[in-house]
Image (cartoon, rainbow, N blue to C red; front, side, top):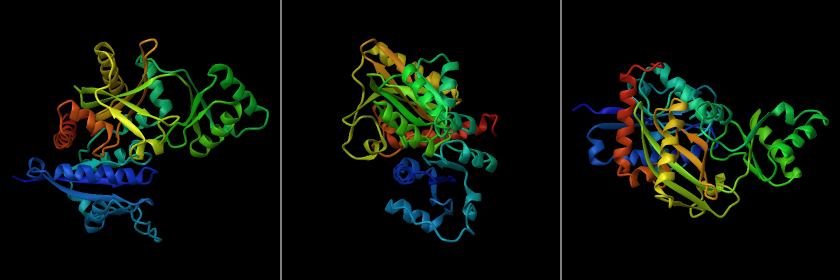
Length: 356
């Protein structure tokens, strides 16, 4: 039996570079178990922080050590593909954040005309951009927290305009509220604000990351998540809950051991669980998702209301990440999950999607 050559693509040009390496290592381990090793030959491809692609021994070294390589001083190799890239039968991109899950690498892989795991250009781009995502959710009739959008030019405007902008946010959303760059992952650049002074500072900081900013009203909620697996007929996992002691689920809390606790399954009633699962599938369809996604919700226990927060089309994939854990509790162990995702990628290509 001829083995499929799986291009495991990791690293990337984002602040989540190191997380991507950890996710890739977990996937490589899952593909090395006997049931998968008989079907797949893994070939690692590592993208350095400056965009240089590495394959072979260099990529394997990073995968084994979990340590990122320093960027070379020469730019002559930038975005030059290793020759081994032409041999790949199916790509497994596990690049988190900008230049990885925002449709850019998906566009490149689409041009290669080789199937790849996960959503295509449209689903990835909409899933990454918080404003585009919320627009898609609103069109699908999914309830959300109250929010406003502003631009960098409004924040960095003349002294007459900026105070009026903050006045409008004060009146419309009140405090606390959350200020977020529209197009970054893993809570980078996000701030919880409780005062006018904190709002002004947070807007200025968010504008340094992105030219488009979203501000959301703060609500007293439980944060719950549901995983989606599939293409045209996706399935929803059990629902999990995240608890933590910090102000909100920021980057440090997400990726520091012991800072957050995952409760699977979440201790909520069956009716709410079913509602969350149905909404997760609606959200997946709304952004034209494929393969996998993790959908995050706010459960307002006092009123029984469920609000959608966001969708992540390429969620963290470490052994302890919420996405694989949700499926493990749903009866799909990690190695089987990785195998299923590769088969879904091949299925999506065979179905003759619009991006083929």
